[in-house]
Length: 302
Ligand code: HMG
Ligand code: MG
Image (tube, rainbow, N blue to C red; front, side, top):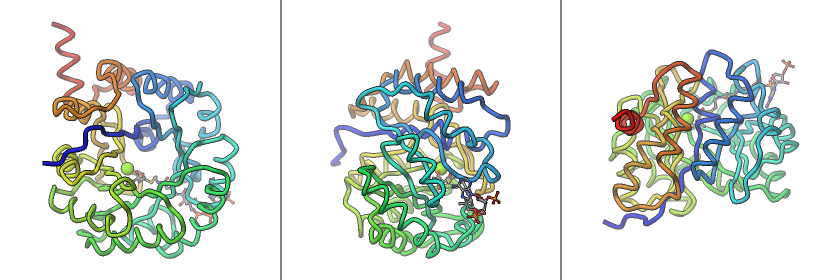
């Protein structure tokens, strides 16, 4: 097995993790969460999204959160931008990276961003151009890369098509996203392979929701292909308001436990990460949705 020696995790808890929460989470809590995550050694944090507050009220404080973060050298902060309006608001807050998000499913594209796949690419085009011109890096997310809540199973060719469209407009990296967590290892490998028909292994990442408990298996299957970048969410928070039945992302704590146990470096302090997960879980008045965090918290109790 040719496993990577080092893995980069993009912590999406403040964005994907919180966007689906019904109760308002104050900006100060989101800022504190980002501080704790960077304190735990996360070097890439997806902080918020510049989407319509009517669509996702939880992210309405995007600018306030970005302004409140005490930035740490060596840490990169990314934000989601679905269109020019979002980009213009985002750029004022000085992110290091922007994320355009499309889908391999036509129905999901309509539900999530209110346009077709082809229209979404036309919306992204000027955003990507402007971002690159300003020296920002650009990531693209390909939602529903294995399955869609509206269309069912998604063929790898759809992923390859969206990857090609994103590549043509200058998107530098794509995240292959199992939005509703229906993927199993071979299907996920086929979706990643489809992205690899356009992008290199250093330009793709896995973004796995854990609805069916497959996200760790899918992570391992990705590692076996040499994929070394993953989006994960502290305490297993997450979900997309426009993907019915989608639960949280794979928990960052579980992925770190898996990687460290395999001798793969992450630069992350698992104990501090567990503390960050407990902090946000306490606020949300629930237990962290992470087996590793639960085990480590129980162990602390002795
Ligand atoms: P639309 O209604 O088609 O947009 O929404 P519009 O251009 O027709 O504008 C309508 C109104 O929205 C106007 O306001 C605009 O100003 C406003 P009004 O005149 O009615 O008062 N508007 C905006 N406001 C703030 N920021 C903006 C913006 N754009 C327009 N950027 C839009 C299109 C994309 C905005 C909308 O569909 C939307 O906000 N969707 C966001 C959905 C979302 O955030 N989903 C979750 C993130 S994706 C995800 O979680 C998946 C991922 O994790 C990977 C995976 O797991 O699959 C990344
Ligand atoms: Mg997601």
